[in-house]
Length: 407
Image 1 (cartoon, helix red, strand yellow):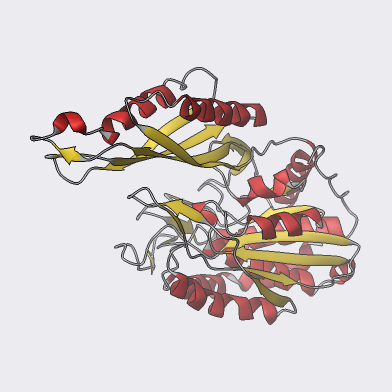
Image 2 (spheres, one colour; image 1 turned 180 degrees about the vertical axis):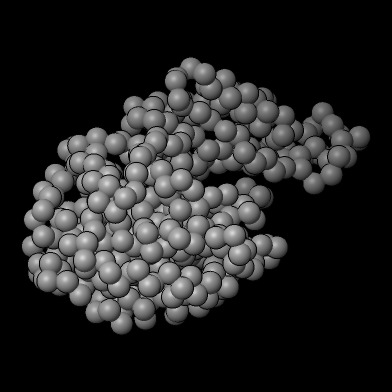
């Protein structure tokens, strides 16, 4: 089967050039026009190798504005590309078109540093990963083993903000697949992410009463002071449960120092390493808000909740990791993995019962920063790894992992 991978030996230059073209377009999650331009480059590449495409509408997504109003956020849709709908086995491959860098961010240019790395927005996370996926499918499709295996690809456009608009698409395709392959970047040394924490986002909207800070201070009800009580109560949960954290990340409120503020918005991220951890967080947060014990005439409302379930490295997912490790060994690669507090669409796939490995993209680092880089030699390397895993399953050389229990 390794002989089938020979076309990838000369693929690096093509893959790098393609990735640089894709990364030259800003596709921050909120930049719908940039996402459309990026999709217009990428989707035809998949169609050219025999996949049919369909764009699915985003689910409604709401957000609390800095003024405390719940508003709907526009989001791009998700693209689903598929072949052989009647195949006996199906592989789901996922990637995201969006990056964390907005249209006005200073980090817009991609360059070849000349030291074996690319430096640019999305080169690792994860336009480089989509390129790896494309090349792996291209080679797989030319082998006799592809005949009885169907491929589904989901390219969403809001992964970097939690996949709220595309979660239904991921869940739907995960329920009908046998394994998942997600092309987030591996670490620079090739280490993959294993178990992943679950996550939730909560927004507390604190309402008081505005008043002149000099003339009628006593008539005001200070929302920022009320928010301080909320923050203290939530922060006190930290340390009560191992590996479970609540991070107060953003506070917005007030208009001037001589005005008693009537609105304050507090945004928090929670993380947990087990479903029980996340359930505990959610219950505790809702109990705090239900108490409404934040000061006279102060009212607090809650928006959000747990949106990324925990992903454990057990059962079929562990079996798939071992298969990836074996494929890596055949290619002379040492594949290891480690648990992480980060989340990705692999969490969603696991929640739908799908065994998956979610760091099969290029090796890279410093993602979500203006120092993001991708290791050039890993483009071909990781395409070979992904393709070999597909071949080992499709040929019957290795058993297909069992779906996850209880999902």
